[in-house]
Image (cartoon, rainbow over all chains, first blue to last red; front, side):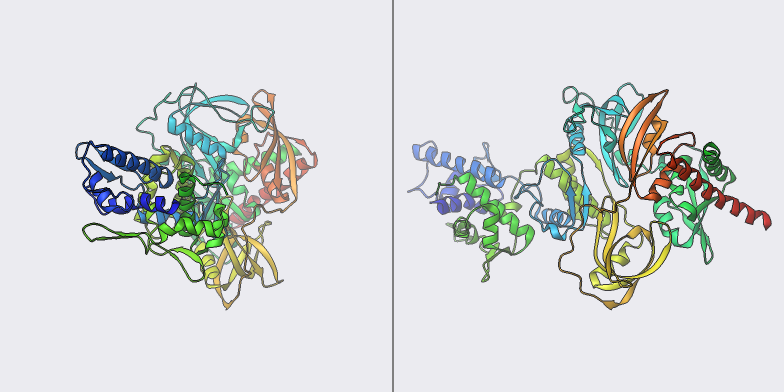
Length: 313
Length: 319
């Protein structure tokens, strides 16, 4: 019985797929196993109505069980398959991506049957964490719902426009109420206001549709989070002397190009638009890299270090 | 045995076919276990799908019998197309769409070749999510060499810069190449001492394929965390806005308002090198509250770095 039902229900999309213009109820009774009737089916008769209702139940089951949608077109009296959401190739491309990249940290675990949920996790070689907070902010952006959270010990109310990841961290960008410019917040630094660590750090504030994202907002542009891209200090072309073993890493962290090299050192030239961020990142290279030009940036580094030494002496 | 509803039956069929599409050939018994029924029950459910074929009154054959196969080893596989999934009109749920979008975007950012199918799929997911999500993953310049060695199971000659900034030549067997926490790592045996170690790919100063082949161990999982120990904690008083620019990785254990735009932050980092870096990156007027030895550590490290600048200046002056 169950097999008959499955066969009958699955016969519908298999048959409809061969009839791109759609088919009538009579076509279905003539061609799909399980819908046979004696003689011709006449519209408006009891038999016609009985078959029509059974077909509708099966179509509902088909949609609920397999996501396959068939619609009845009143004007033409035909049933038609609705277009697939993904093509086969698109779906396979996403399965390949899911087989390589594990997306961890989201509130909802993937459920078997969902696209990408059954890939071999042992073969995934990239793990990227999407914290539940990111998921929540995406939901707020989707519905244009303002959110509140605590950041640097202050309550904030934000109309979130976009979320993005730079280096190892996630950020949200949006319009903070009471501020006249777009603001970026590091999502992991959003504080849990309540002593209860399980409390939501981000709360919806107000109804959906509370704001509109300006058409000129460019998420990709605004999410250029490298301080050397968005910094407001006067642009200077800088030279860094770096030990040869650290050149790769310095260029990976700061960019730039090698303009001179000997057996022990290289000189990397790069543009700097954010002096403090540049200084802090350069100091991560310890004794292995020093800025050598321009003089004002050398002085900036030296003065900072000298101030620390003087203060601690 | 309770009678299953048709909804439940369809769900099981749909999930079973999704499993074999995504995981390849899977023994029918294993699929059955994953969907929570016996092999016999699953087989009975799948029978109309596996052999789905009928003739129309025009004599045309409607056949989906080649789509799936239960082979002689009792493994279920998709041989042509999971046609039921291919006809699905429903977009994925929001959380699934977000997960797939992130995975697809990262995958695209690492692929050298363009994939129009992936592009189209991502555009559709973008509309489902209806939120701008910008995500990419950096790949260090030497990653391709490391990956080539891993795939070819060839040894890799690297010059590697350790935590202290000193570089050493090593020959390793790159068993596993992976990315986590925004960084790329290679895990494998260091032939000098035979010990399996973790290396950050961005710290490899040079790399080339070695002459020897190796056989990697069967299962090398991606670790959940590197337990490198050596946590160092310091409490500092600094301007509120400076908290945003503290270097990572680090953990803020406590943050208290101190007044006059200052906060007192208790910060933990891994290892002495990261602590030294943190201390010199703090604003010069930041106050080290404790432990007091961090004040000396800060001064000494700053003095060492300053001395390098003095030395450069001296060399320049002498010339």
